[in-house]
Image (cartoon, rainbow, N blue to C red):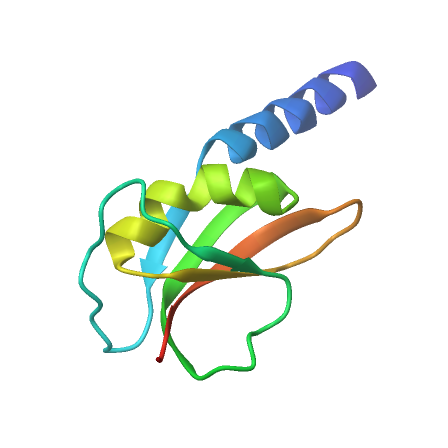
Length: 103
């Protein structure tokens, strides 16, 4: 029984790492960008003003994996930044806020 629970948990974690889900927030509409656009990763909110575009749910182990998993979603949403949150431990994040930095 313990082995099947462990296998089930491991399967969920692997599936979560492979998928990311975007949810639009607020009424601000950003223009989509090319799928391989450049964007900044933040582990704390930036000091410059920004607008929130949406949220990404995923399970990633650090900023590099967040960039890979969120690349298409951030760019499609029109964001130029991703604020990581939902920090658990060992650099594991479960959420990201897609933002558009006001320049």
